[in-house]
Length: 504
Image 1 (cartoon, one colour):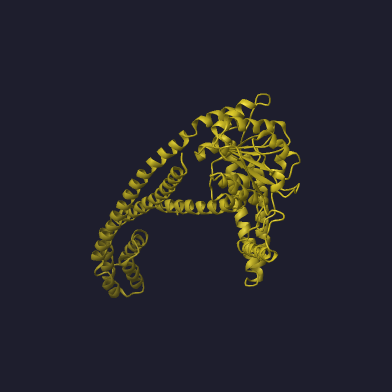
Image 2: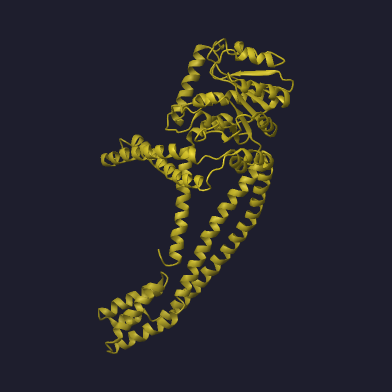
């Protein structure tokens, strides 16, 4: 599925979901209008009985007073807000105070008012019923293409899902839903705590001391509880590779690395705002511009690492599966390391895959990587020259169609020819922008920016990679906002439904 078709499918799905919500809301409104009309159906007879009881009470029949009260109670419970209810209520009050003649004057035109209000209820019911039918038809018309596009999206990755599904460990069906529900509580607490603390800090001088004292500790407590819940639930509710592929519909990005690098990739960098998301999650967010990111999980690990969606291979026969995954993936991102298995994967990618499909990450300045890599390539990378001989420097390497390497350093290059004044101004401007947007650019952000430039140099362009890496650090906050919004909208529907059945 192309990116444009995928974007169109998502747009249709979002519009269909919104239309279904509106249709439900309008249908509930139509039901409430129908209920209001049916409740007011006996109004002409009740109005006549009330007027007659009022006449008898004026003639001195004391027992008619109770009938007047019963009629007033019926209009208070069954009549819509309007003139008839007001007239009956006012007439009842006058009658109880002995102003019977004034009460009779108030209800002189009660029958006509009731008839007008019934006609108004009929018009409202017709209008809401028509709107409900139109919204239901629109929702049905949108759901059909949305479901067909979803099926088409899934059919595009059916082969690789079948391959990955055979490699996925079996999990209890209830595990992910249960931890997703528990995680939703964590997202809600995390977002509420973050907003409370931010409000207490930014509005501290303008806010009353009692409110500030209440917001800050409560916000910190909610934030801490949310962090603890999410740290426990997120690994247990993470999607496997097959689920991630079905949810996205695009061919995957295959992320290959040595298992020894998992601890480094699991680090959470300091941010100007609170974040829970590791370097690998940020990298997966950047590569999400291409497709879902999948990776081989460490054999025997009790829980999958967060970031790339995991699948698992047999320990003694993993090479054929990796070759098959290379073939079915649209991009191969390989983090260089010291493992012999990694160098076998580099050789196989070099021998079997198109050159522009391979991206190499030389991170944290591993010694001997440049020399060994040059032995496998038709042209030298000159990695040491590009990184200015810094043993701790990192770089991203891509290849053109002839396997000529394009090396892009990560972050500012030592020794670059930039005037000190210009560099100082750029740094100051970047810090000011970071402060304004509460952004601290992480190491993975610089990796994503270098990767974007490296891919562009060989004709592969994805403009949003660097910002996707940054936005991945705030995923918990946005998920919390979305969850609170969704709960609010669903809660409103529930309240309206209870009102429809007279329970609210």
